[in-house]
Image (cartoon, rainbow, N blue to C red; front, side, top):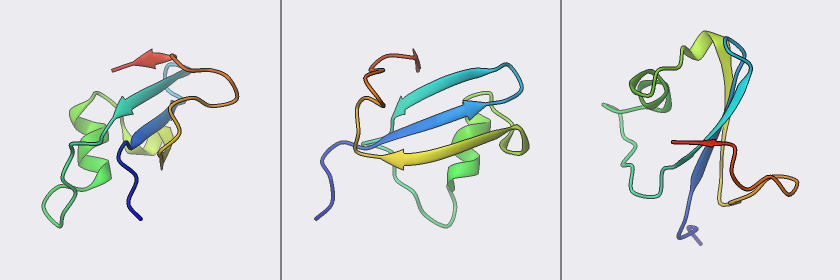
Amino acid sequence: MIPENMYMWVLDFEDGTVHKYDVSEVFWDDDYQHEDFLSDNGHRSNDCEWMLTPAFDYNGVANPITS
């Protein structure tokens, strides 16, 4: 079953911040990859870690820097 909502959590080591993006409507394919999304949102893929999850919050943190 595919989750209705999907979020990308980004740990950006360059500026020491955590970002959460609602990517429920993003279409991933061979022409648009996760690294493209990171770059489009001002992140450098070499300076961050990310994960996709249906979880709106993480350990009780529901709203870090939300973009």
